[in-house]
Length: 113
Image (cartoon, rainbow, N blue to C red; front, top):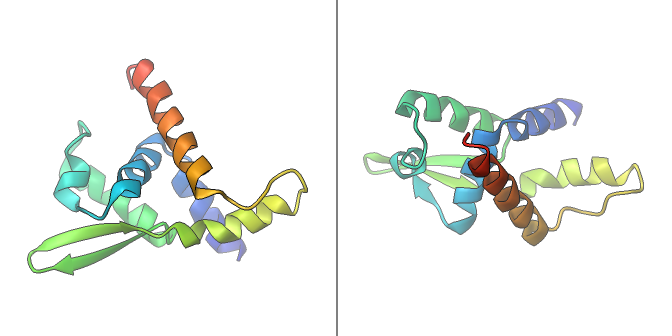
């Protein structure tokens, strides 16, 4: 479980990856659609998607010629349980997590990053 937690927290440590998760809260998206709002190459976005996939936070599947990304919110369960063991955190509330991601994205946007 420790290895999985390391992957999840490492994946969440990057603002681009958190923004990607925010995008995927809405619906499944094609990789090219995920890449659209970011000013980086498709290869760079693909690397971020690989990190998220390895952490189990998203799932990628090929539909025809298009690769799609889907959020896997259950991957946060182990992290939630681990944080709860400190007695100051509750299980991850996905609505609260969505709000957190949106606020983080807004702060990053305000900073110009």
